[in-house]
Length: 192
Figure 1: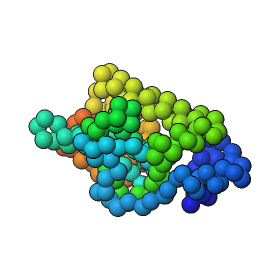
Figure 2 (figure 1 turned 90 degrees about the vertical axis):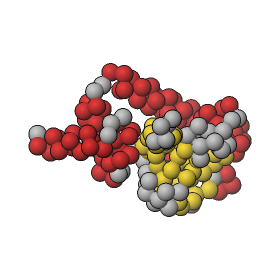
Figure 3 (figure 1 turned 60 degrees about the horizontal axis):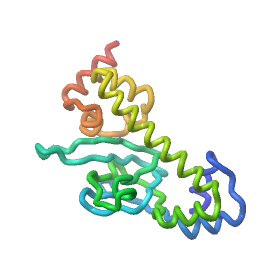
């Protein structure tokens, strides 16, 4: 387990021998099946989930009873309910595996302990937090300023692995359009 996580985290910082013990002590790697939930709406969540393999979507149920996908995440991305963690309240969204996944898990409490022992972990946490805030702001900006076809093109350009591996129904919901509209956009792209 240590080698898998270290290989991923080595992009952020180098490890010494003592940190191997910390990784073994605080982190857990689990495999989840497609449709398994990491976080469930209306339940408390106190863990961070780092995707090592697979795809996860975050969604909520609208007032009309439809699932609305707000995020589609893949390898190297962090899944958590910041709302639940920071406000100590139940999550208002669910995070569900949309493929079989390998996930690295650490509790907020354990991560805080790591941060207290080594500032590198705090810096890593800040990088993930800044990245998450930036993604959310870009998504809000995209909905405010881009048409549906422009949002699709942006997703194709920035995350082609999502276009290739995630079911169309989730991509359409994420883009804020109906699956039929996404099918038309896709066919227009192959014609061009």
